[in-house]
Amino acid sequence: MTRITRFVGGLALAAVLAAPLAGSANAQSSDSDSQIMQGLSQATMFDPSLTAQVLRQMAQDAVAKNAPLTLDKSEIAKRLDTLAQITVQIQFALGSDIIRPESYRTLGAIADAMHHPILWNYKFIVVGNTDTTGTRAFNLKLSQERANAIVQALVTVFGISPDRLEAVGLGQEALQVPSKPQDPINRRVQIFTIGTLGPMGKPVPTGAP
Picture: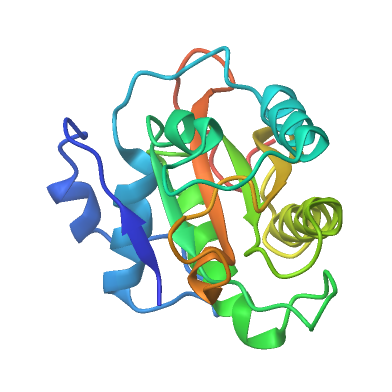
């Protein structure tokens, strides 16, 4: 099930959400599609300083310091909370970056939202997270590989431009429930809206020269 993180001050999307998204054989129900669209479309103050490179460095620094976990959200998690986002469960083969077939349905719904005219010019960071099972270094590596796999699937299977996507693995450095570090709920994928490719204009129709 898709879990959505909502933000105050979103765009007025009622009319848009009533319209069908781009067709996809892998799309989820219309309710899930609408939730994904709403989560990624929220109007927030983009933080130009919070790039994929910065997030990777923050996670690497946290692994290097190996500071004990606390019951509070990490600094990485707090910064990410300011961005429009969705949180989804993508299933992988155990200990690998191979996406399980049943999760392509969720990826199809995400791709439909990204292809929608409201989001066609937006950029996203795909973030992989783990729980605390395993070492910090292993979790960081695995989460990066899984984020890479999701980006590759969105590009090669669903036709999202690679210019719109970046992959970041945070390992266990942004736990959803810090008080339960080994809870599977911490194993999740987050997709964050981080700005636009350029000035907003009209999308080019499919098949146009």
